[in-house]
Length: 362
Image (cartoon, one colour):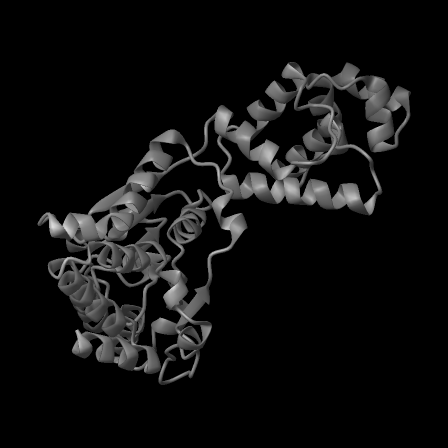
């Protein structure tokens, strides 16, 4: 056991997480054979449950850079509490939890001869929440999120793009983490695209090789808005695939309640008002809804308002959906949404006569 302890100390001094992990497992196995199962279990539980505690910010700061531009080719973020405060549809949430549980129980699965799934592909509409899901998984696992920067990865020098991909995978392979490949289609396009250069086709081959050899003890997550562009071989590399679509009305309501939490309002407990808001937000992405309510809350603070009003929400929704609109159209929209003529005059700072005349002509 002295050899294992010495190797673990060497790994700690050199910040070699793989060495620490591998020799700690060997040490645990020897302790188990010698009858000290309690200590062996404690070592394995520490490795399984607290991976992020073994990752220092110092080890993350020496991130890889593009040889040509000297730009960093990854962004690094540690999990924070707000990353865990997300609302996921049951169909997506259950799959995400299954994926997280596979990671949490990977040692047990390996012992039983099962091949674990460490790769996840998220695809769907822009603004649907794919990055949010990646951050949520980071929070649930306690692993830092290393996000590949494709604006820096794709180099103008032939051959550098493949080198950058290899640098990223090697960097992420050295420490417990999640490697997140956002906007994945930028480098994972189909190789049969006749318009692509031969170099970009070689990039796909390099990407596939790096995915195949990526550490099974880490997590790999990719996200794309354009799944139809991905090379067919890419799909086979991901054990878990989740489509991220638009939220339904119950999920929209959950998002609203989350975004306005702690703010007084006159619509959440009013079934009719809430129903109209939900109807107007149907077909919108979580990103759109978040931006909308951030703007509404900002205006509430700037104007020193005590309460978020139903009318404020309607106006913000209408303006977000109609960049170039006529005041008369907003009057009609508010009236059809149950806002009184008197209240419309206050909102738009016009006379009651103007409101009535406008509604008569419509």
